[in-house]
Image (cartoon, rainbow, N blue to C red):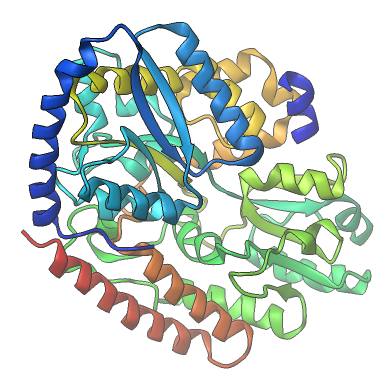
Amino acid sequence: MGERRAAKARGRRLPSRALLSGLAAGAMVAGLAGTAAATATSAPIPISFWTAMSGANGTYLNHLIDEFNASQRTYKVTADYKGTYSTVLSDTIAAFRAHQAPNIAMIFDAGTATIMDSTGAYVPVYKLMSQDHLSFSTSDFIGGAASYYETAQDNLDSMPFNSSTPVLYYNKKELSAAGVKPPATWGELAADAAKLVAHGQKCVLSSSGAYVMWTDMEEFAMWNGYPFATKDNGYLSDQGVKLEIDTPPFVDHLKLLGELAKNGEYLWNGVATSTVPLFTNGTCALYENSSASGAAIEKGIGSSSFGVAPLPTVTGDKAAPQNTVVGGASLWVMAGAPQDTYKGDAEFLHFLMSGASQAYWASHTGYVAVTKAGVYTLRQENFYKTDPAALVPVRELTNKPALAWTRGIRLGYLPEIRTDEANAIAAVLSGKESASQALASAQASGDQVLDQFAQQYRG
């Protein structure tokens, strides 16, 4: 995938709501005071943009920024790479408290509920676009991207941007030699395991190292249409939310992974260990990971050696597949900036959501085009004919309109809950606990985290 693309173009906690609201009021006053100074000069008005994009993706992002800056003379956007997603979040909050927040911050999916509940810390993007009379609607974005970041009122407080979703990578040669096809269900995968092992395959399946809880808990729930937590996974309220992972679908799924692991047919070595080499070196024939991992996989195994298929569904679940949702990050406009910067924020985000920008971003990075205009542009350019694997995640995200409980995971302190999930998965794979025991423990611990979030953000 990456070679074709190259040839074609070449967590910490937030302070309480009350504290942030007070800080926002003070920051806005400071921003207003600085407006006159900003407009008194003919130099472009600076727009600061804190990101988690480095390496090739950082280069592609800077290209888009350069394109925007060259398209007009009023504003100049400058990207500032801050490190990991968690670092961007924590640095943004610290800077906001010091009245030095960036204009725009790239906040990862797991931080959405935390910052969304921090009234006064940000300017809702849908309101910003409206006041500047720029065309903007939740319906401009594809299904699983819009639903993850939309509010209960179907508005977008932030703008989806660098987004991906899990897919199933498969080794073409190994599956063909064993006489099997990419499994459509988990039952098929279990049955194919015996054939692959008989053929001499060491491992049948692996999953994302750092985000196995994303692929095999959260997206597993979305794709098969299962609730992950009460209150529609937290979309209806942040108060009284409880996890629903100690339930038969999740127990059965982890039990299956545990059985495969016991036989050496499923490998995962913890969140700190990359599992990409297990697939690229031929150890595992199947691999669940982000659609954005395609470039790294291609670099290790070659574009002709692997294929991409949708995630398996639960055997016998007639409602599945439902829809997946995005992982990655969205772009938030922070409060407290000089007033003359907000129009620049809006124009820059509007530029990024254009068909041309989204097509460039998706065709170079492996992320999906999050706007319908971007998907349309890529179709017009025959990108998906050249690289059909890139259409798999788009089809997953738009497979069916999201149900109330498959819009996404809107849980406070989600990074901590993910740690509980990962611990449960590790306990099952190691044989230390049964799936039921591990998930009961993870749910109890996760519910305590949700209670703490509810107390901090109540009222």
